[in-house]
Amino acid sequence: MAPYDSDSSDEDGDYSKTNVLLGYASTDPTDDDVSHVGGYPTWLDAKHPPPATLARCKVCNGYLSLLLQLNADLQQYFPRDERRLHILCCRKRTCSKKIGSVRAFREVKKGEVKENSQKQAPQPQPQQSQPPLGNALFGGSAAPPSTAGTNPFSMSGSSQPPVNPFSSVGSPSTLAAKPPQPPVNEPQPPIETFADKLKISGDSTPPRTSKDPVEPWPDNSEAASPFPSFYLDAWPEELEKEQEEIPAAAASKAKYDLDDSSNGGASEKDAFESTMDKTFQKFSDRISQNPEQVLRYEYKGDPLLYSGADNVSSRFVVPHGKSGAVRGMPRCEGCGAQRVFELQLVPGLIYELEKDEVMDLDDGMEWGTVIVGTCVNNCGIPGEITFREEWVGVQWEERVVKK
Image (tube, rainbow, N blue to C red; front, side, top):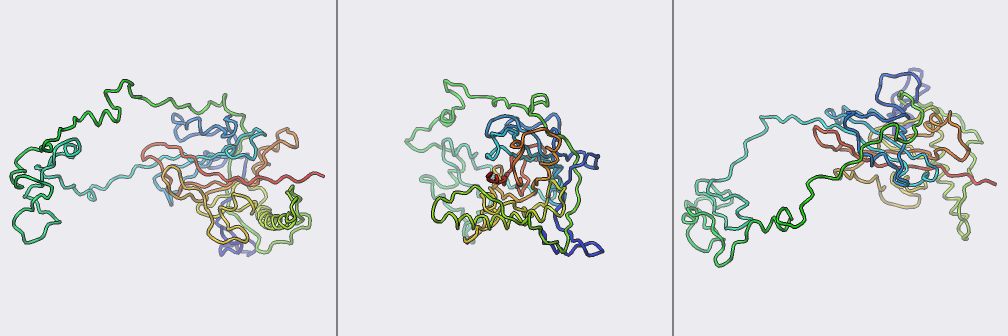
């Protein structure tokens, strides 16, 4: 992310802009009729929705509710591709703080690359005297190349074609005039043998000719209850150049339920709280500059961490007191490429989605931020709509100990 003292600033010099684009929930329509928070998802092609497996919680297998749908076209990186991101979560209390209760997937329609006919040089054809590759695999010895062509690996200055080192009888010219012959005194295996091994034919159990039916995405009437729907507006992040002193109440340490039964428990607790508080305070300071934000977007940027002492943070920063490189996000399961940070959801989204709902104090979402990493190649099948699940890192809220 851009530092607080970015070179880009307003004329009065009181604010600075960063590279982060902030999203805001709005009840008024915006120019973007695709992006929204809450509600139900929509697709690039209504007749081609994703499979229902992407709609289910990995904890309880129930249907998920949409948190965010984003028009994620990136013309500067993928000018021929259409992209959408969908982030969903399970609303069941028993699934909270468990891996798989928040999921994200990328919907992409890859543009077909138009081949330049001038760049497609004709490929050299094999000499007519050479037998098909299949003959060499399923029986028979391959004939040597015709003498009409020049072997690029042969020694120059020789007017005679090289003798085939794998031939035991006959001259090259004699072999070239004969069809491929099976090895001497060895029976030629029938071509069906290879097919039998793959069970293509001749098996008592017929092969499966069709794929198992894919469960379709649920209709709205069958899906999980949706969150309230809002439009999504976006503005560049602006920060005060000189931040005011943090109020004492906001800077006070939170009390966390930590195991300090061992002799070193107190010191470990202090170290944990010190690291966590520093990261959390930075998060709070940054969010407080634009408190109504629900989304932070910066493709190939860095996330604003909610905590510095969990498994998610260790992917982006080196743990205190240790050396080495950060772990980074898992690679794309579709193509093996790296994943890069694209966006994160922040607590303002929880407020907007739950402010009008009636619930107990212990109900509701409990995450501090939801970080989404996407494939740097935007992989997919050219000319088709494909769906790829992406990496989600959730930093959960820590519960305050009740005394």
